[in-house]
Length: 113
Length: 113
Image (cartoon, rainbow over all chains, first blue to last red; front, side, top):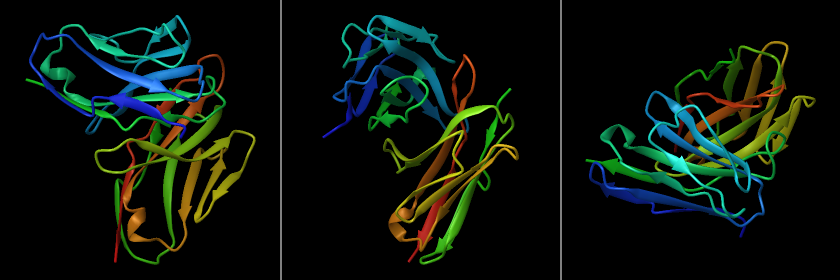
């Protein structure tokens, strides 16, 4: 089944403890992206990747890192999480940037205390 | 600056009704527009993607139209069912070099048995 898989689905952590949210797609998509979703603010892009080893900042990149060493994986790294990073996170992929629609993962609900 | 608005924010209808969800955008220079469905606490499911050269797309009971000149898209749901209850989001992709996705905040739909 073609899908985007995120792990974990739920995570509660403490301020400052490094964490990684994994994202993997099995559709050979070139484009991958991370979003966070907050009430009243909607979906905001954190980082995106046009292809392997090509990443760029979205609208709200502060406090996050990404890497794209392989086409299928696009992990989101929070080096020192803070409570304002409590949010619902989504990974999405697309065959290529622009023309094609997005496939989303099921989301990761992160709580930083 | 492209802005995407979805009105109403919430809608409650009895089962069986035909309904229309609205998405307005301020800049007609778009590349495509995509409608998504989001179930509570879950990821986004792509419903329909309309390229800028198209007027409408259909999938089952769903029909999405696009009128670039007036900056509007509508999602028509025929014979609504309780299973259609979800939040519906539209996202507009800008034309030109910066094909960024701009998201609306969504319409929360409740279809009552």
